[in-house]
Image (cartoon, rainbow, N blue to C red):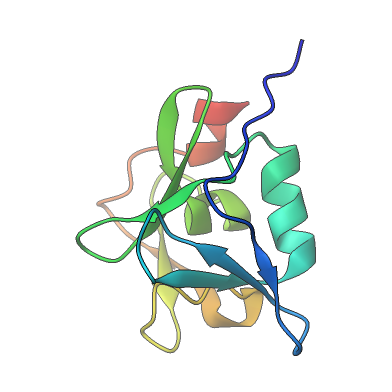
Length: 113
């Protein structure tokens, strides 16, 4: 049986065709395309997202916290997400890029599949 998680607050669909995802119980919101949000939910990410102290957006899946951008881009070990506009709350695919990094030691999708 699938465990359906209810969102703390509802996702807002903006007039410009993007989703605004509330981050915890703060006023902050992540920006993402609807198809990307749907993919993440299909992969099992909780609808309840949070921002870390460093500003990265995280969600849980199967009891494990993962970075939303890493899951979205299917980043492998040795790859790090770069936010082209410098805003880690902007999860639109046109704002995300993968770069080589020794810091990233895991593929986040492996933790949730």
